[in-house]
Amino acid sequence: MNQQTLRLRAASLSVLRNIGGLPLYRHYTGVFSSLNGDISRFAEAYGALCDMVYRTGDVGRALADAVHFDMNALTALVPSPAPAFLLDAATRDLETLQAVAALDGEALLSYAREAFPGCGAFLDGLPRFPAGSPLPVSDGAALYAYYHAEGYGPFAQGTAFSVGADACISPIFHADPIRLTDLKGYERQKKSIIDNTLSFLEGKNANNILLYGDKGTGKSSTVKAVANEFAPLGLKIIELPLSRITAFPSLCTQVSQSPFHFIVFLDDLSFNQEDENFTALKAFIEGGITGKPENLLIYATSNRRHLVNERFSDRQGDDIHIRDTLETITSLSDRFGLEITFSVPDKDDYLVIVDQLADEQQLDIPRGELHLLAERFALRKNGRSPRTARQFISYQVTQLREADS
Image 1 (spheres, one colour):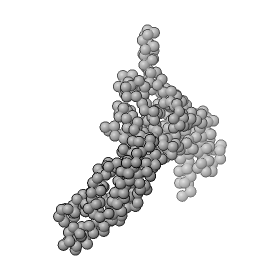
Image 2 (cartoon, helix red, strand yellow; image 1 turned 90 degrees about the vertical axis):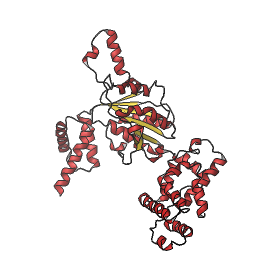
Image 3 (cartoon, helix red, strand yellow; image 1 turned 120 degrees about the vertical axis):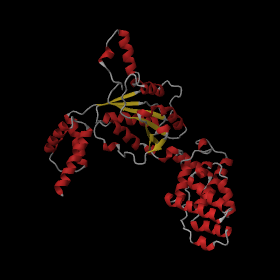
Image 4 (tube, one colour; image 1 turned 45 degrees about the horizontal axis):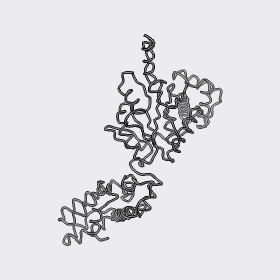
């Protein structure tokens, strides 16, 4: 593809038009445009492109990711059949992107030597960069099949996401990698959550879940482990801080346009009755105008079953006052179809967890001595819990390493 044709093709993307707005791509088109100007304009544009390529790495990989994370006329049709004219347009765009990715620095400098024939010595001294790798798909039909199989849009960038200011949803690139096999005990509770999640992923009826109970019992870890376990099936998790609960309608809009399934994770919920977030969350979960998309569930954790701080005064007064107050207190937790309790383990269950963790770490400590040390550790840590057991085992591993060094 000659320079003039490539310049025009690069400016006329259609299905993949959004790619044209990427800084990397704009640097390429800037270089193409500068070939119709003077040498100083080209030098500035080419230097800026070199800097961008050096910081980006593989240009082909970057363009492939941009295509994958795009939302366009083709993704809007998935899974319905795409018309031939749209597939042809996508093929043309992919050919253009491939031609851009295949350019190395020397190819662009050869274009410049033709445009500026008296500047060969200067151009020879400019830096170079390598061509990018080929795109994984080369035609519209293959791209459509890729979108259908792998998903698309911004949520294809990762498995875990967070909600920032202005309802901006960003991927968490180093999310907690915890898996279900890392969690000891609470088999009944884990099974209930797993069954509900699988039902959700299979398009069957599923409930929002409230995990409540004592601190350190693994409520939050269980939610994250379930999300990691079923990520290969297209499950995503979005952590929504209570301080940004008003972003829920915007989040629902974005999620509803995605092919993936989502758990919105509300961690460590606790409200006062006068808290505006309490009223807002009730409306968002059920009964609000915006509604909740079918590909979204809410999993929340709390140390309180009813999520609201109760006072003795709430149970004082006439019968009507008491009933109204208690109905208000329970009105949010009632919107969760499943309530799963995580209580502190008794001594036997706690020591079973300790034994399992010790076996994983191959701790060579007699069981009687290990249990005695674990109980002492729990007393110092204000009680037995899976978290306490894990901290105890980590402490023992550290002590043994220090003793061996």
